[in-house]
Image (cartoon, rainbow, N blue to C red; front, side, top):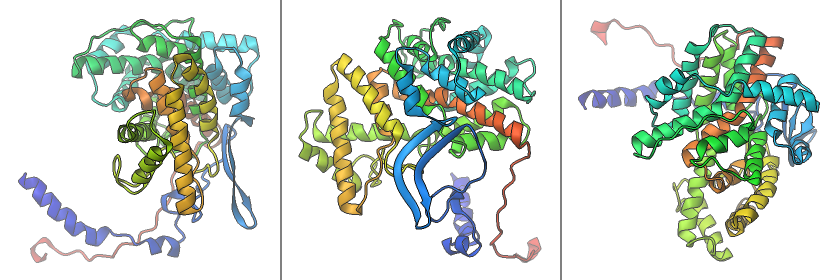
Length: 446
């Protein structure tokens, strides 16, 4: 297009006016990307909701330590282990994050009942906003659907703390169904697949409902539901500094409606550097499997695949090994370790231990290569194993990141409310102008 050529010319010339050398960040003490020079995040707030620990600050600098994730000061590993045979692990985490304490049995039952009352979604919303408007990308579709819910709220602009809590709980309850309906609508319209819609079961947990809504026969095993429940628990929150939660709080600080804040968070989580990272890891492992010839590949062949990925000769040729490294965790990601242990149960039940062992062998080979080339290893993060977990559960790749939304929504709600209670000001960081001071030139003299 002629217009495109002109725009390319303008863009090329604009680079002379927009370049910002890295040295200026140090000169003006500006934290690029809200990061300190040692890579740690710049603290921009206080929270009592969740803590992500990956290092210690000592007089000698940053000391790497095994990672820990705390919800209201409780180790998430204790929460997963303490769930035992109960079905509502994610709901218990939701209660803890929203209200600040562990519920008694009767309190959890009442909370789960309150959640289930929101399972129902208006028929006109499902038909008009989802089934008749299929989306090519489910994350974009979720944004659209959440914004559409504004029209079904009697007081959508009420930002009172209690009202925000109610709106948040309704979304926690409804997002699994909305995600599954959006997926079924997409494959029906774009892939010409059969369309079926199930209704949520009020006797089911969030995890059980997701599996029931997604599957044509609505059947699932107890261990499958337990695995998905664990994934939801692990993804429920990750501190106030993660991009999508920070986005939610920033948008909320303007006083806008709750649905707009969630739509913004979903847009953030869609990115491959955030919630979309599990898809990159899954796609990389597809390429690795094809290169090595399958799950029975030798350790040496797997090592060869790792080397090719690191050398930019496999998958997207970026030289990155996806599923390793994290912005905070330095030694280990506790979520990955917990998920791996839970995966053993389901893999054994389904006769797929050879697949899980393949992933473990790839993980070991990746760590060995990092140690040889860089003198240190990057921790295996939760994205490496979550994609495998979803595949074992028969969850299509289109739903990987929307499922992350279904889990993280409670963290967004909790931090949104906390900020309303204890700050209330509009977030307004500053930037330093380092461009030229141009003189105005009249049009006829340019």
